[in-house]
Figure (tube, rainbow over the protein chains, first blue to last red):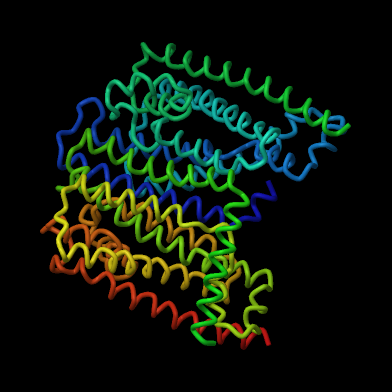
Length: 250
Length: 269
């Protein structure tokens, strides 16, 4: 936590840029809705709510919680970590948790400043509760995805470019930039079932009411399924990767 | 220093760049893939939105693609030639910059020619995108277009350079300029993507007269696409002023740079 707090400029950047982007999304969606027929299923205030919440979620979801794994594979210090009497994956998990919590705290001032620019539709408490469950599932899916990417550093060393590619693809195909309901119908039915949608689109569509209560269970089940699959892949990759370190070491 | 020596240094700089790129070929290909995905997602997002909402203040997807491609060219040209200017704050921080000052070559020239893994891949991609967008958007390719597009792209790159240099110069006084650079860059990337006429009056004026990003793509694109409602009280031909604005803007940044340089020497020695 202290390490993060020293980067005061990062805080201003994160909040400042978020506020600017909230302003931008309000302007862009307002212009689009003013000159075209507004879709009945997602009126202007709902799409502004969607996009603003998406940006706030991005504060937490865009963090690479297990970056340390990649760094330690790079400089070789992972070898000594294996000798320590600790669970190494748990160590990486808790190292990143501080940063995640720190950014989660940033949501509060960002939200307050954003509220000066836009009005957010807050749904009923039950919907909000389901949203948080869905968000947590989405966060875990993202966590596994990042962990898998960082694990590839066991075999190849430079992965920053790949991670950035995945981030950009996630933002687009996960519905952070544009709600998936605006994509061509054929594409939509595919994208809805990808893990990217589990990260952003599902919680957001629950929040704005586009996924009605009757479909909550099914939506959460798809997210949970992705979590199980990706967690499984994570375990397999970690086992294979750590064996490799031991082989190299001795 | 004679221009001949500088030309030699510059040639050598590009030779080292190309060799470095060849040495780390896989890494280069990965970053090139990233560049494609980066611009690809931006254009894809526009395509998706404008398929559903066909008009953004009278601009359709074809025109928005042209708007994006024009910005992409200027920005890529700047990144190819001058991205090293952004490393000056690091040179200052590490004390490396003092070495530039005692060498018999202009310090800014030395900063620009610090070799790295630089390759004109983004520029090539930008040119290809621009050609495709020009055909796709049915812009009339006449003599004015052929003569002015290279000048506009150069002018846009100079606007970028002006910002890059001014922010780097600020590093003579404050140690951390990363935040400032990041915010300005984001402002540029996100606000140049849409027609300036959609913004509130204050932002329109800001993008025209204070941070003249509107001259990188919006005004020239509006001119070539025969747009009449610019959202700013300027004649359509204002779009052809980009080269001039670029030169003036870069010159202003250079004056600031010289001032900063004197200040730096005054403190350091």
